[in-house]
Length: 216
Length: 300
Image (tube, rainbow over all chains, first blue to last red; front, top):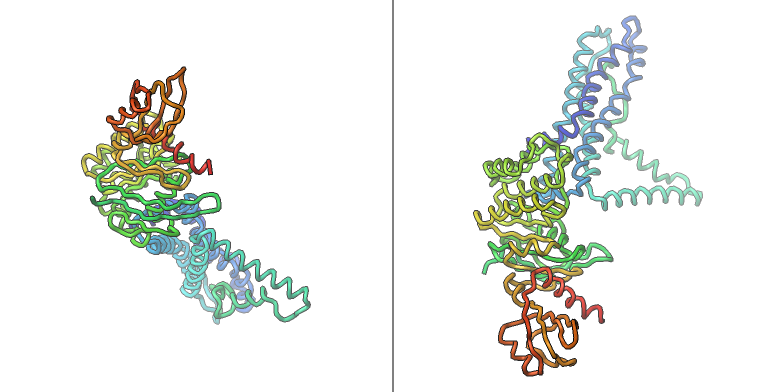
């Protein structure tokens, strides 16, 4: 059962997944090859390496979002009739889709890991600087899984759930406007929400901070 | 009598414009049950309720002994479903769709699937998005039959198909039923199509169940009578007069329900004579039935 679900999802997502997998391999290789200069002092090298750091979470977001959206697209187009008419509980079907999706998002992660290993293997790292191919791969994996899980939940949800989420967001925005009109400062709900999402206890913290293959 | 499908007081209201009201079905095990009704009468909604795709607001559903929707997955293991509109994934090929579908059914009959594939002449390598309507209809029947179900829920399976494909599909269906003694619940608004194959009939109209009875009773009970010299006021009749039309002079045509042969004595009693009793086909009977079902509400 899992194998056929995996196969169908692979078939639907294979082209964007192939491109993202290639990007996963290319990102660490290109970031090191394009920014690395053996003549630079360690601090300057780290600054240059940091320039391409944000591309890692962006790639993780793209992988998670695209795969999650693509694997639910045929069900959404058919209003989930086929999925619901299959003889298994809904949670089990969702779990199958999720599991197969996780397997799919592993390919860019795997290639990013290989790319990171290749990039660090062919580069002579200056004293005081360390390569973290395993660390960045693990972080990329976690970020991809977070992005995939959030997008998966949104894509799998009913239109009613989508309306509820949009309603909550509209409420927060309305509250923000109302507070601003009333001249109440220091109670910015949107800012607080964003702060919480990116805080160490929030779900999006994994995307924040420095993404460095080479670091001190 | 054991029932493959049983519902009691089923009620469902998807929106303001439509309501399924008090539907109580009794589909005997092994029967071919024709579910008739005009477009928008609630046939598809009822079938979706039986499948567990929708949750009723009131009433109970039992399918193959399992309460639906709570135990729907168990019931669905032995239920073949053909929806009104194709529900399969259009980017998969025929072979991929069969493989995908088969994986969910432990009773999948590979040999039967291969036989039907050959019989229907389907190209395994063709994506579903490029199949004709007829080919898609055949594939959906193939998937429903090859899973070796005890119950087939077919929602207008031949709607829009050409006569040749329609015959192929119905023949495959009847072959399966005669071989496996499965129960078939088939909805259609093409009344004549069901006349040949069904042994029970349920009729829906505007979200309400009009009637449920054996096909034989349905067909025998409704007659067209040619009557001569009938009085203007009929008084009490031993049958129900559904329609009364004047043809020429003193001759009239009546459509009646609940007719039995000894009732012709009635005409002598009112000074009229019965010239002819004509059997109505299912379609004519169906139309007359709907006409009478609607009449009281229209008057109200």
